[in-house]
Image 1 (cartoon, rainbow, N blue to C red):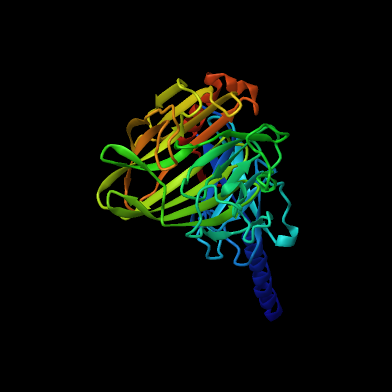
Image 2 (cartoon, helix red, strand yellow):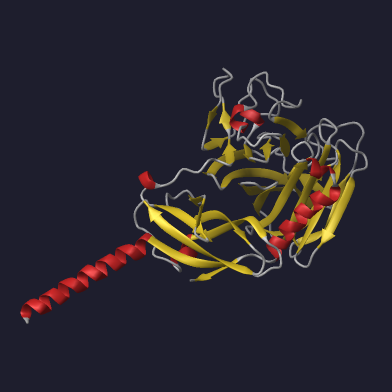
Length: 422
């Protein structure tokens, strides 16, 4: 009788221990698409706390293997605040309209984690000694003495760049603080190899070319603050800082932080968090401006430098609106579509910086269309910036095809996927 009792106790602990280990190694939840639109590689981001509501999270350095409907998909963990602890799980999902998919997350040790080909990149190449060799850095304070077009170049691509297999972008990390579009004719991730000394990226090559120069414009997704009815561009800041947040197969994230932006007698601070996802013709910008009181408006814009009369489209859905241009406005006169998508909850109207035939200096803003977005100090606003070049896909020569791309993202944001317990 005693032996039986001890055996039962021992059996209880063995079973309990095995169940605990099994539960900690994996978990499941359900993703539901309640819209009437099928989704292809729809971005999914689940915060650490939210994921803990569906499964036991490992206390050690295990990595996730994510399966959707029984099929493994690339995924990654992202540490957004730099504290050494991951904050979000990211992956992409294919899901039919009005349907559900089971998602399983299995935790494995790093030596057993699968390899996923890189489909995104965020990078800042720095040359500190003028020898023309650039090394990727995770952080960079822009030197106070650094100015636009200074030589020898300190920054590969003149500043940070980000890309996926479809399209690339770069930011001028100097007084201009604007973004340009790098059109691609290859699916390779390659911006870490471009922009070396003597390289010409303004003529088409085997990889593509810089298809949208910014000059005095707002480029694509450039930022200004409305002051006395006019947009004051994010230029001539006293300090700037770059931080690589995450680089992975699913998405890459970087931050640009500016201090001492002079507007109306005030010195403002700005943080931009830029994210790019695999397979998408857009990047997301989250902007936080501090240093003012009350309500303000920022202007986010698109360039109108190369075409005097591009086709401009303004759309308004229930929850989201867009501003887009479609014309022969690339550097080699191909058709290029560029556009913005933002929430109606912050949208406050459109504007235009004057079109000038003589290009002024870099401190003057011109040749741009913009949307005005409401903003309060310390609170983020979000928008998407689109770029689609006909050399990447001939269908982008058709304005309807390009606008449908923006509309698809508006529908996705209007009806986000939901997650629930299995």
